[in-house]
Amino acid sequence: DAKTTQPNSMESNEEEPVHLPCNHSTISGTDYIHWYRQLPSQGPEYVIHGLTSNVNNRMASLAIAEDRKSSTLILHRATLRDAAVYYCILRDGSNYQLIWGAGTKLIIKP
Amino acid sequence: DGGITQSPKYLFRKEGQNVTLSCEQNLNHDAMYWYRQDPGQGLRLIYYSQIVNDFQKGDIAEGYSVSREKKESFPLTVTSAQKNPTAFYLCASSTLAGEETQYFGPGTRLLVL
Image: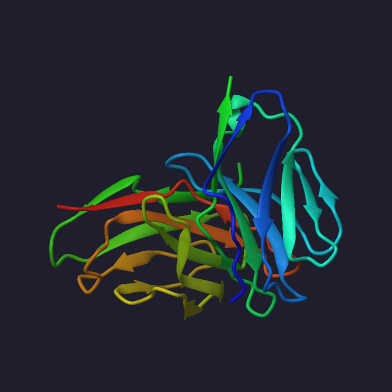
């Protein structure tokens, strides 16, 4: 199974952009890149996903490297409510399972 | 409102006891999943079901059992064979087609007395 590598934690200031990196050097051609976030004692929440092209939605942007071995989740203007653990996940294209890592704990400073 | 509900929020298990965690969804999703999360770690897949009356083991199925008699419901039983059941249990659902974003319930925290 292809795996992802993320920093354990990151800090950012409120109202500034945040770039959360993810490495997935063993990704296969059919694996989608998903991002979820989880607040303490809650279920994860979908953020964004993509395959090859960069993606934007109301929550964030996803920048995928041309070789697909890494990606970056971009929060354009972080708020205190964005403080959470962010998971970069590969969706197994053969059986639709999500392969979870330990995630990055994002700390937002006021 | 459409969504996933899990009950109870907290559950206490005595030694040697089987307990069942409830998961219900009204999103009309075909696929449902059970995950276990230990403190400071990511999610690990216990079981998943892509259709009624069918389910497959995930990475850590030993000591757990499931059933899928209705599309809306996917209960998880933690049996006495699971020697370390203390964890946060999360249920999720998704459609089968396309990229399949998973929608999660609020979770059940299981503690051993």
